[in-house]
Length: 337
Image (tube, rainbow, N blue to C red):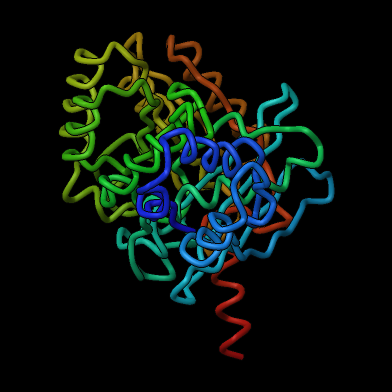
């Protein structure tokens, strides 16, 4: 699905016609132009031919129906993953991917096992959100939040990611508030600098996962290019310019980065007023497994006693392979058997 073609189709039409088309796509959530009865039949036929709306995807719902994972087929045959998380407070969050695969090779991330295929264009990113928006339509629910925490490093696909953000935020698009959109980066300095200059109040999240360079370089090879000192210096500059809180994501890996020692190191590192640590028990992938609840409690307690603001992510979708890349890898392995 690519709606850049709308300008061409509506070139000789009054401006309000294109707005009607966007309303049909983003508000009425149609999946076929034939359903846009507010438009003339010739226009619908032209749109169907030039701007098809179908999004092909397989979807797996968790048993509790609170999360779902989609494997979406792209026009070139590649597939990308997205996850829907339905929160108890009524929020519906879609975790989107910005690439097929990832070049960074983080050891705990299933996507890293795939290698890197290519970046997604802006409409391939937006299509992931629309896919789930259509799924929720029958229950009169809407997508309220979007997080770029799926496959790929968003800041290595900066232009397409920002174009997608603007479409999602557009009042004539899905009209999702900028403060409800989060971009997660492993610490790509150039991307953080660019984002600080954008006139967008989106949220910035840093995938930290270790409190020192020695350990972080072991599990995140990109730390050699983007070490902690440089990341934190750029985050400070970002906060000074935007006055916005920055979240530091910390995936807890049993026996790797979850000891009291690492908790104390993290507390010393992340201690400023606009810093927030988000603890994430890992989904079991490869050699890694999540810590026990008691181990997580102790880690969090050390941070809180040190004055660090902490949240803990609710664990969604373990039975639907919700960790990035797990479903795509499973499908690929099945094909190779």
